[in-house]
Amino acid sequence: MAEPSAGLHHITAICGDPAENVAFYTRVLGMRFIKKTVNFDDPGTYHLYYGDAIGSPGTALTFFPFAGAPAGRHGAGAPVEIGLAVPPDALAFWAERLAEHDVAFERATRFDEQMLTFHDPHGIALQLVGTASAADIEGRAAAAIPAEHAVRGFHGVGVWTHALDGTAMVLEEGLGFRRVATADDRVRFQAGDGRAPGAFVDVRVDPALAPERQGVGSIHHIAFRAADDDHEMALRDVLTTHGLNATPQIDRQYFHSVYFREPGGSLFEIATDGPGFTVDETAEALGTHLKLPEQYEARRAEIEAALPPL
Image (cartoon, rainbow, N blue to C red; front, side):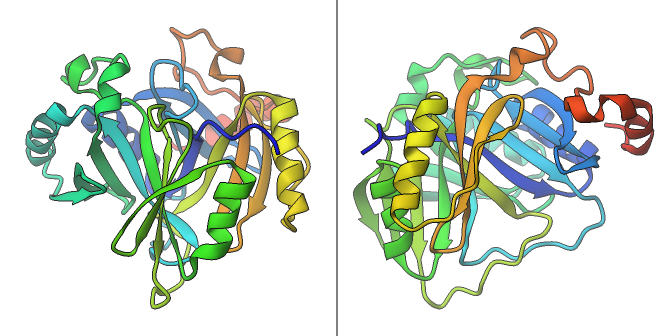
């Protein structure tokens, strides 16, 4: 058995207009824009990254923008809900802030945690979850958001499925999560002691759910942490032993990746903690320049001319 994953590494979703995406996540939610690059497989499409000061594992939320593309449909066979961690006493601040920015929200309680649920401008389902462990992580002041109220990375992610067993097998036997609670139609899985960013995967089980249709407002995939290459390959070995078809390791410049589709239909990834986002920019300069994968550098002028302004 490989060492368990420490939790979520990053979440990648599909948005519409990229300038609207940047404005919402930096100016409304106060996340740091940490990387402006392009899709490895489609250099005419941005890949935009947000996170804490350096995009630490467990904080990196990334987007592929496709302005004008059809909206997706939330449903079974995909991750759907992104939980962002804040201290419990920050929820009142966030309720006021969302209202000021005309973001409709609802209050909810799940697994004894209070949260605000809402959608970003392109339909991504978001939750601000009040959790005591968030107060142990230093916040970053930004966009009129005091440091003590700032988002501290991921709380977790909600995965929707028709049947629990296959998804549970991957989380428990493949990635080392533990099943810790059940509430209504959701089962919570936890990495480690539950205090690190991105420690939770909440699986919603409902055979009546319509299948997910990917588009704007959909989550493309979620990635789980591996400490290094050896850990990643050990986790991959466990998954293939359980009959899953995992890709070879792929160098994504900021981390190394292995992809697989879990039995419930969701696209999962394992990503290494390093080398990290400061491999091609200083911490102070993160997100300020268009960074291209090496294979596209010779086409920089062409790519820059085709990309829309942010």
